[in-house]
Image (cartoon, rainbow, N blue to C red; front, side, top):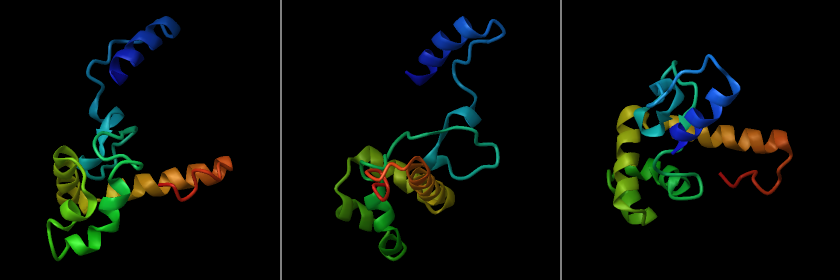
Length: 119
């Protein structure tokens, strides 16, 4: 859906724009792929800050001992559980943790008190 919106918007505003279906990976990076120096835009594909991600991060330390601790502790759907497992394998969940930290920084900079600490 994101890609089709981009491909509809930009040709109208930029005659040099080319079709980007699919978007190149650096522009549509997934959190469960782990960190990379080539990331330009990260897509909140899979666990979202308001759905399961905070719980997974909260259970991360426990998961180092019990690999499935987040499954019983977070009660998220199996698809999210699988994507979180991949994120932990890729970089220990580090990219997702960085994204949550960045979200909080943006909320603070914007003075959006309702969002600070929500992620």
